[in-house]
Image (cartoon, rainbow, N blue to C red; front, side):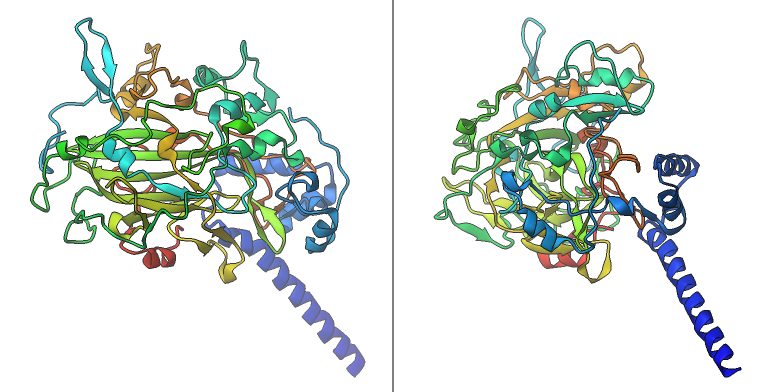
Amino acid sequence: MSVIAYSLRRATLATCFVAVLVFLIWLLPRLLNPTPPDAAESERDKHWVDTSPNWFDRQACRWLSLCGVLHIRWDAPALPDNGGPSAMAELKSLALGLTAYWTFVEKSGVSDWEMAPEKKNSNRGFRATSNSGARILEKVPDYVLDHAPLVHLYSDEHFWPADIAEYIRHLAPYEGGFPVNASEPLDLGNLGSLNGKNGTVFLTSYDDVEQRPDWLHSRTGIPTPFDDEEPDGGDGGDDGERDPPQQPGDDTTWWDADRDHPPHRIVPPRESSDRHRGLRRRQFPQDVQHPIVGSASESNKPDVSGYSKAPAVLILVDKGADILDAFWFFFYSYNLGQTVLKIRFGNHVGDWEHCMVRFQRGVPRALFMSEHAGGKAYLWKALEKRAQKNGKPARPVIYSAVGSHAMYASPGMHPYVLPFKLLKDITDKGPLWDPALNNYAYWYDYEVDRDEAQNSTVQERTSLVPAASNPDLPTSWFHYEGYWGDDVYPLSDQRQWRLFGEYHYVMGPLGPKAKWLDRRKVCQTEKCTIVDSIEAGKKLAWY
């Protein structure tokens, strides 16, 4: 009898243990994504699960959130003959020892802070009108370039800054898993024409990205570090510019502004921004720009000035009342996701990151940096600075994380989302990139864009205009509404898996126009805390 009771107890404990384990496995993805999916998302997920031909895989995915387990393998940043680890190193790194052979299948204002502008400023970006009536493009203000951020890329990065004009040569438009018929090859001048299709368009790689084609790495975009003799400004430093005496609060100020909600005056007006317009031009004139279409060659590698062959994208947005937001967008051909227990999550083709400097009458007040689905904002005085020669103001130094390219204010380890530092970004003082030396520069008017979006008769969009430094730049690419990379790979694809709600491959990103350029606050999200030190930023998680 005692033997039977003992056996029953063991069976009961085992059953309870399995039940608790299944419950925890079921609960974990819901904790990581506390927002319940809507009906459309649930339907898309059901269709995604159904793509697997394996019945056991489908059931494990539906009930245990373990999808594509037989596909799991080590996902190296680069192939062994292309700067990646050897086969032996991969085997040593593999935690589960699971491998699967597979073949690639081709996939189907005013001068003060008190008063708002009396009317819409729909011509910002055009400096004047000539006698012939032609509008003359406006140049990028000197103070924007003089305070442009310097970006430390990771020293062991594998996926470097890319030129969007070169990038789209390796992609084809897909809709619903099928190629979209295009009358001519894609370029930056016709990308917006894809918006007229019946559904969402994905720019899909011609190549299997796990074969790591050269264009994915974009090595010609590698900047080399600045001369070590050039001094750093150290952590913080306000360049002699005074910040408002109080921290950001609920009152409408420079950190919460648009043309309909101009900032209130909270300190006496500063001297005219004409002082900033009188600053001496940079040593690298902004009219020397990288061509829109060019061949990639080693001879175009950046020099010790921090120049990169890959142009950044600078978009200037006038918010009225002397508030100017300067958005610096950085593009990479590939986002290599981070690993948890040697399993990689979050890869995607195409990667847009950005930072934004908010100026008030030519004075930098704060800087926002994107991090995954959110980001952080810092008062200008809180940022690390690098001193410049020729009496120019010190410039902020920011850091791009390896693989994900998320942006941070300091080097080191940056955990996010998961506890115990299981998921983290890493930054260091790798090559220093100066995006002010090579960029596609534009002025953007979000009010004009809203009007044009409501007017179906508009043939040519005028809300985005090139700056005077690059008057012939195309603008169609900016208005493209689809994704700059592949769709989520189906479960039937041997490259794909999903564990506890996190995918190995996710869809590519939307473009700069989707990054809330008309934001009133400095942050990309409505909830916006502007921190006053780098240490405070480390404690403030983006989620």
